[in-house]
Each structure stands twice: as structure tokens, then as C-alpha cells.
Length: 325
Image (cartoon, rainbow, N blue to C red; front, side, top):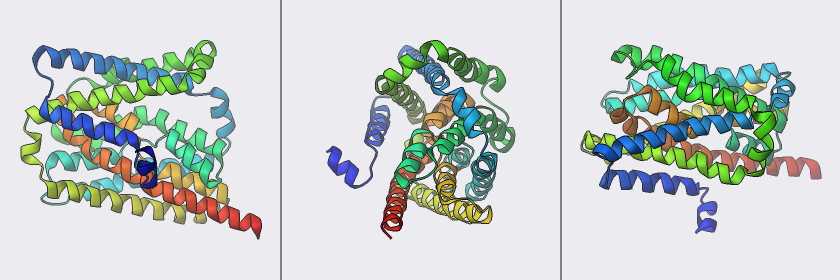
């Protein structure tokens, strides 16, 4: 099974996400169980951001900050170009309003960390710069994504479900800062148990997906969303990714980046983080809204992995040919 998934560039974790959605569609959390599941999911999100803080090296921040032109270029794609595209796409007539909001929300998210770094390494890019750029993007996303969401989404819909400043500070920012400041004492432990703690990250996201989709199903999600709309979301995701990849290449050449830095711009500037997006959606929107809003993100997540895996191999092959020549 793992070989089959790898052959088609399918993330095994996607199967868990789809299974969670299916389970939530059949047996959504209700009543007291919904409250318990929601509380556990909130605790898991706090733990997730605590671990992210503990993983972030201050040395990587200092070393990578020197490539500020590259980081500004990545940020311009992530938090400027993507949202502009999202605004245009979310205005498509006939699209379910919740899915349209989900498309716009995914364009407001920060870049991924693990996959951006992994693909940069495979392609022969500047790994140190990728580590720094992806980390900066996720740290900025804690502040920038809620701000953009307030301006472009919830400000037009009448506000957040709760005070966003207090909620984000208590559930996301404080755990992140606590983990980062405790890094001198727990950093080695986190590094040694990276694989086990990774299950905690993914498990937290699955819990949020289960509670969110359960609430959305109870609210009538599948009676509103059609298969045609899901296919449209997949097509939109492909189109958005293609536009950003083209823009990344054009910007990199205009900035005269080296090949190694251009690879960083392509992979860090074109991705959106599922690991950050699902928790943020749970904080910024009501539980009944979250299920539909993260659907486009789940589609985009898998598509970006498949496309970038192909690109990384092509970059690597090109590097090999140049070395032989």
C-alpha cells in the first residue's frame, strides 16, 4: 500500500483525513461527547503550537535572516499574491458561500515547514534558507492570517465567533512562545522523539477535522455541497497553484536569485500549511463553519504535494545532468 501511494505521490495522511471526514459524516459528535471532543481538540491545538515553538531554533532565525530579500519575496507570494488570487476566485458566481470562504481562507495561510524543506533538499536548493523562510512564514501566520481573515472575511460577515485576540493569544501564541523559551531544556527531547511527537501534531489535526466536520454535517453540509462543487474546488486549487508557481519563477528571475534560492522561492512560496490552517480555522470560525471552510485546504494540500514532488525530482535530475556535463 505504501509503495502504491508513493508511486502516485499520495500522502498517506490524506487517507486518514478522508477517513476522518467519512467517520464524522456518519457518526458526528453530539451533545456531551461533542463538548468533550472539542475540549480535547483545543488542548491538542495548544500542544501542537507548543511543540512548533520548541522546534524553532534561534540560531536558524539569525543565520537565515541574512537572506532577507528571499524571505520578503516568499512573504510577498504567501501573504500578498495568494490573497489577491483568493479574492478573485472566491467571487466566482454559483459557488457555495462556505466553500468560497474556504478558498479565500486557504490563500491567507502561511507556508508549510516540513514539506517545503524536504522538497528544497531533494531539488538541491538552499536548505538553510528554506528552514528559515518556512519558519518565518509560520510565525508570521499566527498574526497575519487572523488579521487578513478579519479584514477580508469575518469583517464582512459580522465578526469572529469570539474575541480573536484573546483566543489566539491563549490557545496559539502563548503555547508557541512557551515552547520556544523552553527549547534550551526540552529541545533535545523534542528532537529525539520527533517521530512520536509528529503523531501528536497529526492527531490534533484529525481531532479538529472530526469535530469540525461533525458540526458541519449536523448543520447540513452535505445537503448543500454537490460533487460538482467539489470537482470545481479541485480545479480551482490546480489553477491557483499553477499561477503562483509561474509567479514564483518570474519573480525569482527578476530578482536574479541563484538557482538554489529560486528553488526555495518556488517551494516555500507556493505552499499552504494544513497543520496551521486547521487549528486557525477552528479558532477563527464557528464550529459549524469550519468543516466546509477547510475542504478547499484539504484539496489544495494534496495537490501541492503531488505537483511539488514532480518538480523536486525534475530539479534534482537537472542538477545531476549539469554535474555530469
